[in-house]
Image (cartoon, rainbow over all chains, first blue to last red; front, top):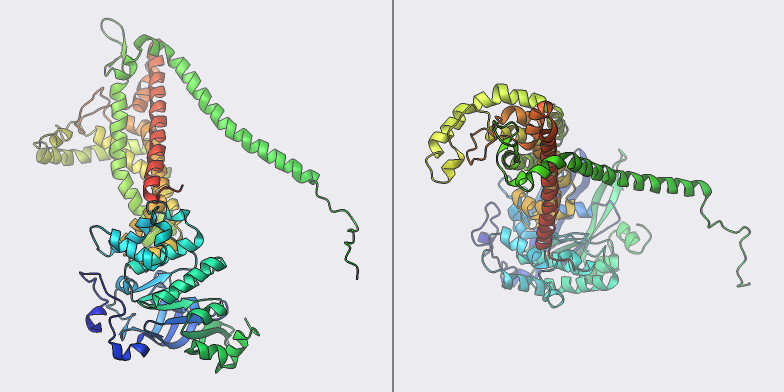
Length: 287
Length: 330
């Protein structure tokens, strides 16, 4: 059950974890994998995002939308401790993953990122072959021997296998932008995380490549929980089950802080928003 | 409403403005000129040194590079000028230098780019660059007065411990004065470390944040991130840095002349005195005449050829390795 799968303090000897199996059938429809409780993110003394609380539901797509500078990417990076390498970055509040605080003292960020993967805005394959890009994550997670099956599985799940199966030894940098991004997704799912964070994964892609990624996101919810940051409201409406709307507020000291305004099911947020600011944003009156 | 285009009141100027055209032309001539100048200087050096060295090449033929004896004033017969012993000395001392300097330099560079707190980086870089500013004669004097005597007991210990092992033991033979291949290599290592460090650091700092993030997001530790994202990106640049260091080590004259021991000698024993091409030139040039002088210049030609050859080889290695690592682009 979930208990032995959520040990984040040490590297497990067997690094294979079957996603989607941690929660038993009865409550899977509405179980949250992650929970944010009053999360604030600071860069030095500057509070970039203030008091965010929201759940991340199992095997669902949660979208984060909002204008530039509202802190949605900052919150996303707080979900797998990707802010750690940034000097001065600090998180307060609780980011819970299966009830365990990711920022607790004995938690190893390496283990966190193994369970909670990330796909970035600009496709960033390594300057290696297609095969080695996918195999990299497997190798660092101690999976030895022949990786061919793992690589094929990951590329197939990322809907890229048919396009690259004859050129696995070619440079990943020779692929198109959309293919590179799907390769990055394949690389992420190869290590079998539970949650995949996507930071505007389509913003550098053309509409056709974007459509392919969106289809893929839908497919991936069978096995994974997805959190996606997007600039594109239509995209959020198309791919997500839940949507969080963030905005930037200026306080008395003239400092801008990102804030979560509204979180609800995507259909409700777009058709019947509870907050006036959400309504203004989605109807194009602001941002 | 008419749909015809109104002709613009004045015709827009699309021809080049006079002043910018001139500036562009000066710029292109200037850059072309300086580029050609480098080639011209290189060519002139090659031509004139070969011409000056010709009497020695003529007298010795191919033996100039295959002969290990160097005897400018023999008791009987003709003088013998063989560069092989000195080429060996140059190669061995430079190799020892790289063996020590490369891991240290890469380590320092990684520390400065990936680990060191931001406040520490500036001062650390300054200190390392200062090391590069120390004149080589100072390194030489320090080597001969301090390092060589201090190392003798250590060499002796290594000889006692490893000397008995077959094959490997031959590297750690009997110890003499402390002025030998090993000491020369160590002094050279200290001298080339700042160069290799500073270029390697620049190369590492150009690795995109996105690549490092990608590795970290897969659950890579810092070392795994460095191996997976930093090294593949920097391989060519690091080899370039090492080549620059090697060039400096092979060409270093006065420091090596002071600590290498000054013997015409080819031996596996690293604790034995030897000599390098650059060191021989500086030691003997003042007292040479005629064919002897030509032979010393000939050493310079061989040194030049060796450096060029190694650089070309390095380029080939880099291209092969990058193709293998990155996958073929075509």
